[in-house]
Length: 177
Image (cartoon, rainbow, N blue to C red; front, side, top):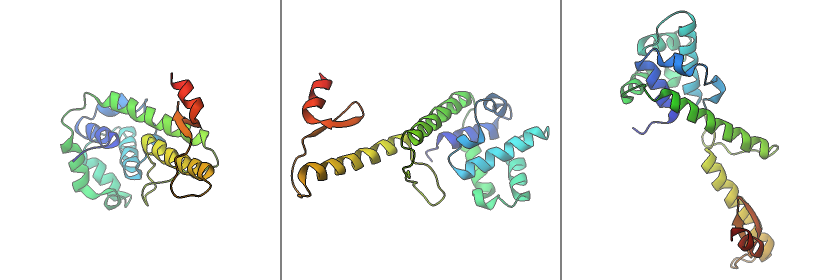
């Protein structure tokens, strides 16, 4: 199973109770894109503030008490998260990467304020920064094709992509030199 950063962080905390202390000042709940990871992390936060240990069974127990266990994938999924991570030594680095990704997402959202940004699935997970760039690139490409070609199906638009924006092809060539 290829794990996301969020899953790695959760898995690391599940296998090493001290990993929570390493990331709790770095990560905020809102920085978890996946709502299930957010719920699991919140349960870890609650357990820690109750002066308890964090492990698979305690997290699953708290989620069960709140009626959320099956919604996050059940005990089997939580156990799998713990078993897929071999060590917690990189948990701080993973947390910092997650925060950086979240900050890039927020920057894109501010940049394109007022534009409804696409979501990938019914749970509302965000698109990644790279996927957002691809989506915006395709939308810009289509827009300029229509603009330059006046709706004709086959033509080559005279625009180029340089330094993260569309511009007239001649200008793009000049700035790339």
